[in-house]
Structures are given as structure tokens and as C-alpha cells.
Image 1: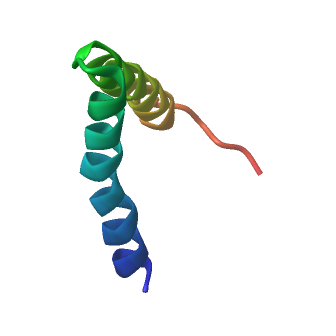
Image 2 (image 1 turned 180 degrees about the vertical axis):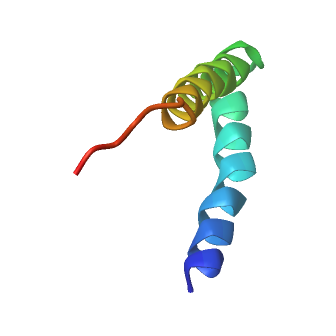
Image 3 (image 1 turned 45 degrees about the horizontal axis):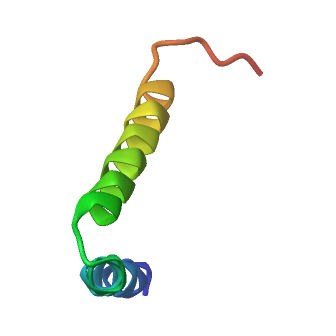
Length: 56
């Protein structure tokens, strides 16, 4: 079920970017949104992958 929900969320991305492209008549805002989301995901991945000791 989690995989199905993940695919459903992923499938909305191109549709939403297409709608954003049509409403702004350009690629600047949709691509800017992708860059911003990529930076956020990279930051989250960096924090999650840090080598640290977790104490109980």
C-alpha cells in the first residue's frame, strides 16, 4: 500500500508542473520549484546520513 501511495504522489508531479507551466507561460517558476525542492531534499539527506552516535 505504501508503494501505491508513493506512486500516486509521484504521478501528480508532472501534472502539477504542467499546470504551473501553463498558468505562468514559462518554465522559470516550475524549474525554480524543482531546484528548491532538490536543495531541501539534499539538506535532509545530508542530515540523515551524518555519522553520529545515538545514545539511549
